[in-house]
Length: 386
View 1 (cartoon, rainbow, N blue to C red):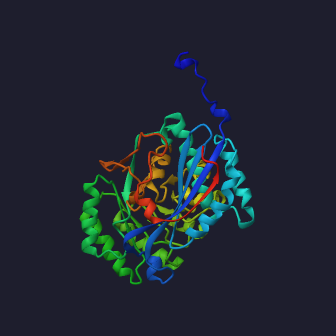
View 2 (view 1 turned 135 degrees about the horizontal axis):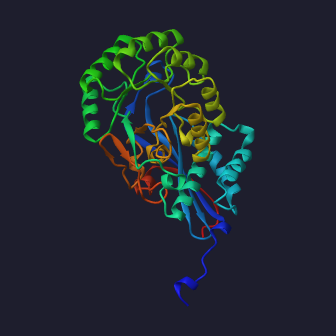
View 3 (view 1 turned 180 degrees about the vertical axis):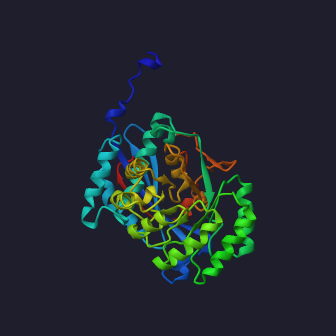
């Protein structure tokens, strides 16, 4: 009998056999402050709650997915994931769209957005990771890549707690790493401080280096009008979240009035919430976050709607996932560079000449580091490990 004669498992008939969900709390080196902290609405961020889902099939295939929460909600995501995970046992892992719907309806009484869909996101990402790995393709190639690298910008060096002199050093460090843009947090109680910081960084970077700002929803409509008008002079790529994340009408008015593009969407947690912004033209750059909307499956729906409407895309956070998704868009997006999640994984993304290189390893191309064990607060299993 030759190798060709040995029967191989039929991928069409595989079944999910075992799932493990883990609640992990990743500590941050420095407490993080943005405008929400300065307005007293939130405390400085000291850790990120990560929800991991590991899915294994009867035929020996596996996938890793994750979602996350900042400041609150991590234990709730884990509890919901633990409760709905048994719904996947015995299911065919190929049927990702149907399984997303099954998980959504399993917890429909608590809604099909927010915490519930963020819990689903970890399973959905794991299923896409599994499918790509089984095919021997990166997730980007499985979905259909438009490019092998994506323009990227750094956010982690531009928070409000960072003194101005250190801010300038951070911009230099980002450029030396091959990152192609810089984003600054704004929203100081004294707007003149914001203007001075933006002006100083713009002079430091030069007139044409890509620069963005992010107000984290903390301006009123009058304040946003004033600040957008002042910020027009700095040749910004975009002004992000100038208003409350649900104020589609207000964002649309700013987008229509000013030359500088308006960006928002990271806090939206469903396709329908994004559709409200798309149909009202509430953003020039839409910023969907795949874990927050429920994974790759709903993210692709948001991206298709945005592309049809002629909006640009800039996915929020989670670069380890979003670099793959950004590679599939016809109109090149921006990927946000955050090194915060790097300690969770053994692999590192490469940046060069202003761009983030799309990994060629199968699936997401990441494996969990040994450090994850010490940050794990709780685990739960469903099914029988093959």
